[in-house]
Amino acid sequence: ARRVVVLISGNGSNLQALIDEQQHDRLGGEIVAVISNQADAYGLKRAQEAGIDAVALPHREYDSREAYDGALIKVIERHEPDLVVLAGFMRILTPRFVQRFLGRLINIHPSLLPAYQGLHTHARALADGVAEHGCSVHFVTEELDGGPVLLQAAVEVAEDESEDSLKEKVHAREHLIYPIAVKWCLEGRLQFRDGGARFDGTPLPEQGLR
Ligand code: GAR
Image (tube, rainbow, N blue to C red; front, side, top):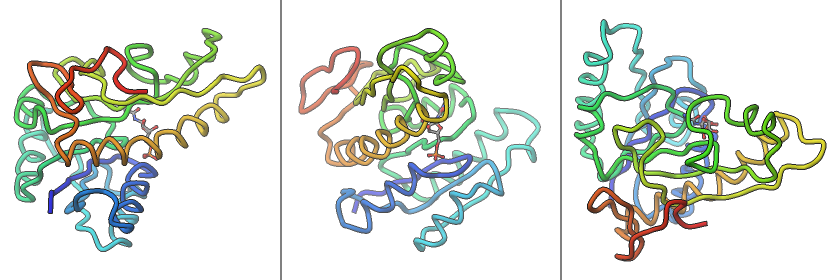
């Protein structure tokens, strides 16, 4: 079976969506380890509950980003993954890390990229009064939140939308599209080639599949 390592920092609801798919034999592979930079991340409990190897690797115990990412690379490689999945992993990765896993490293981001890269995406979208917001799955490159987009899901922003309600709506879409993206990556349908993303061999547009 294809092997997946998931990196988290917190609640791990996206991890849970992936675990649920795996338990229904729909993921197209096996989550072999979950690694968190926060020892108290609830997602580690979700992994343990599902019988998945759960590893806490606190970044505070390392002197530099390079040292931490070096340790992270070692732990990940021990599990020989075909795909490394960032699911709410709230750390910027070094170029060395990104290069090591380039083309088999994906992330989910809570906006319709290229809009709202970075943090506080829901608050910023609301403040701008946009009609549409959402989430994106993308290949990770050295450009922060700038790698080629694979899949997006959009939600309508209501008149009386609050930050919490918007976040909740987007989360629900994340849980739908991330398992699909993971499955298509594991099947080789989504591929990173020549710096871009392809679906069944065809280059994807800037916003990926929607
Ligand atoms: C998700 O909304 C994900 O898009 C976001 O963190 C949340 C994690 O939730 N990721 C980022 O902001 C990456 N910069 P979860 O732990 O419940 O899956």
